[in-house]
Length: 249
Image: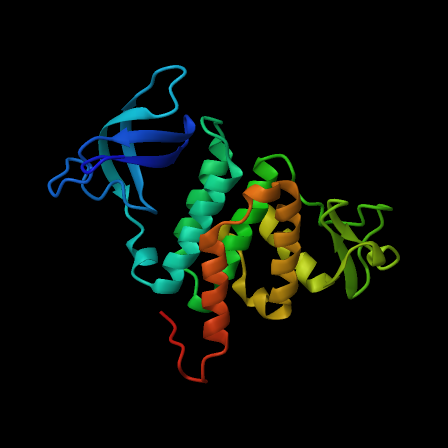
């Protein structure tokens, strides 16, 4: 905003996404301290005026800094992807307490899961956010005929809004039923009840492709966060690293 001030974007439980002018935030001894750093949960006081796009921030305090996410490069990349997805999915001052809760759940979960399972909190947030915003994908049966998904290979159609039985699978992309079952498990579950052992039974490429295709269609050009692209490139680089080069943290 200037040499000493900056504009910050917060997603809040009570007001939705807000843009605030933090005057003096760039000064070395700013009263805001680290409370305006990315991926930070805090308490914020701001002055709100109607018809103004940028409000004025008055006070802020850190409630939780997500150090367990920020200390690890891959977790930080994943957390940045979730935050940028949240920004891309929402309009200013559109209150959505449920979406706020899902974002916090996903970020907290990122600091706890094994490094090999970092995709799961991201998928969890994407699926939960889609539901909170009104375009929840249908994963419990065939969207075209209503039949159960009984075959090992089924289909998924972003255009039709969900899964397809083997008879109609040609109308979408192919996907293993174990992958669909896991995505539905995330869609209805909570982080503290998710069995990460089931991750070994799914095709991660198919899971990512289905979710990405669905969100690409339903939030159009707004869904191209650079942080997500960076996270995916980072994961691809780690998968291609020599055996033993990766380290669980």
